[in-house]
Structures are given as C-alpha cells and as structure tokens.
Amino acid sequence: QKEVEQNSGPLSVPEGAIASLNCTYSDRGSQSFFWYRQYSGKSPELIMFIYSNGDKEDGRFTAQLNKASQYVSLLIRDSQPSDSATYLCAVKRDNAGNMLTFGGGTRLMVKP
Amino acid sequence: DGGITQSPKYLFRKEGQNVTLSCEQNLNHDAMYWYRQDPGQGLRLIYYSQIVNDFQKGDIAEGYSVSREKKESFPLTVTSAQKNPTAFYLCASGRTGRGPGNTIYFGEGSWLTVV
Image (cartoon, chains in turn purple, green):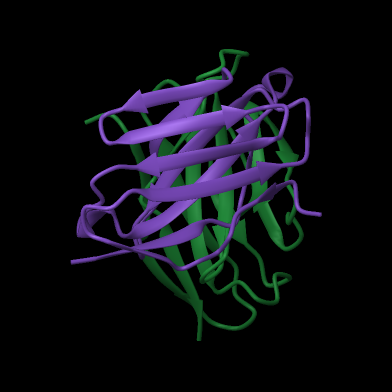
C-alpha cells in the first residue's frame, strides 16, 4: 500500500462545475496536508495546506480533512480551463521537520 | 527576486558521463531537497539536507551524489552509475521546524535526457 494515494485520473469536468480531488494516506501520525498544482512541464506550486479536521477555504479552493478516515480532499469551485493541471497531495509528520510524502497526483481536465 | 534557481533547464548526457545540476536559493531556508519525476509519475526523493555540511539519502539515492558546502547551494551530480537518468529533476527548499504550515517550495526544474 502506498503511503499517499491519489486516483491518477484524468478527472474531466465541464467549465463552471466543482472539481473534487481526493487523497488518502496510511500514516495515522500525519499532521499536515498540502495541495500542490503542477502544470504540464512545470514545477509544482503550493495551493494551500490544512492541519485541522474540517474545511479550509481560500478563494475558489476548499481543502477538507478527515483524520479519522485518513483522507483529505480539494474542491475547486467554478472550475476554469486554466485549472487543468495535475494536483499533488503531500503529507507530513510534524516531528519529521518538513519532510513531505507525495501522492502520484490526479490530472484534472476542465473542458470549456 | 527571491526564489530557487535551477540550472541548466535542459541538459543532455551521453552514456557514461557524470553531469551536475545546480540549485541555488536566496530564501534563507535551512533545508534543501532533490526530487526526481518521471513522466506521468509522482515525485521521488533523491537526497535532502537539513543543514550545511550534512545530507541524507532519500528513497532513490543510488547513482546520485550531492554536496552542501553553503546554505544557499545544493548541487546534484547524476553519475554514470545511474542507469536510467532521463527525468525531470526538481530542487526544493524549506524552513526546518515543526510549524504545521512549514512546507517546501520548488525551483523551475531541470530536464535531463540521455543521448
């Protein structure tokens, strides 16, 4: 079992819809969770992080964390074609400094 | 500009050659990392360094070497022992410490192709 798992996709949604990206993790000691966006041929860029159970909103993005079920998700409201990218979930244990474990990423395609 | 600079962006290596990828950061971060990404795949950790003159192997260190003589610099050498080096190489840096939001930030990456 991989430590951090994501469906590789592609996840296809129409423009204006909500895109829902999911990530599960195996280490119950994980404390912080990060979402990165990676455009094709580019490096990952941080979108947001979450460390408390519940929802955290930042503009069109909402991260959701459920530690009991060991999953974290990213919702993108009003999806735009410019959101088409691969989304990487990363997990860290605070007692490991800032060592992150990455999932394989989910490719999102937003169709006009 | 503050950031992480990788060079070169594109590099071609002949069989049996060693090549070195440069990574420099001016963010005053203590920790630096090298990741490898193969097409359509996630990131795999090659080496990391939390402090000057110290570094640790990641998950796929074989065939690679690093040095950390300065806080700002963390070059990666891809040696001839690395049999399948064609990939996208990402350097990252971040603060050390236990803050929940502490994370890492990436340079623009270097594409290495074996010819």
